[in-house]
Structures are given as structure tokens and as C-alpha cells.
Image 1 (spheres, rainbow, N blue to C red):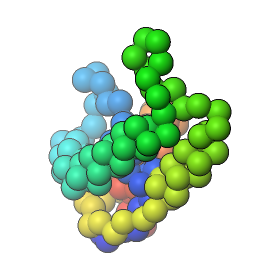
Image 2: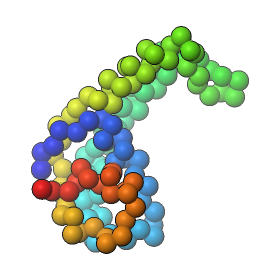
Image 3: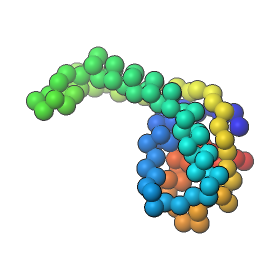
Length: 118
């Protein structure tokens, strides 16, 4: 299914924490991995942009962490929002709601919503 996704949706999906003890039907697990492979280049491009923005607006703190100085927070936040709101069109494998486990935490369900077919 062809879908328009925001970079934010892709980041949420790619940061999905699926532990080994979480059980999915074989086809669902396959489609999660398959879709992750499709979305990975977009996620990696986001990470590259995010790092560039941190270098552009931030400076190294005492512990080596990047700190955004107060005078750059607004510009950084606006640019990050623009990046996260940008859209890409991708073709994903979809599943049916009935394919998912009966019990699932809300965070996981929210991240998998982009895979559920209508």
C-alpha cells in the first residue's frame, strides 16, 4: 500500500522497541522487518540531518553532550519541526488489526498504526 508518511511517523516506527518476548504471527513479524528495511534510508537521512542541525546550532558541553544555547533554541526547534513534518511517499506491506496480539501496549500500537490496512 502506498502511503504518505511524515518523518516523525518514520522515526517513531524505527524506534519501536520490540523485545524478544513480544509475540507476533510470523507474517506480521516479517512485515515489520520488511517495512523497517523500506523505511531505514529515510530514518538514516533524518539522523544525518539531525546531527548536522546539532552541529549548526549546538556546542559541546562539559561532558561532551551537545547543548543548544538559548539564543539558538527557537531556530533549532523550528527547523526540527519542519524536518519532522516533511512527508515522503513509500510503499509498505500492510496487516489487518486482527493479525496483532489481543493485548498490546498503546505505544506499540500507535507505532504500528502505519501498517494497518483499511
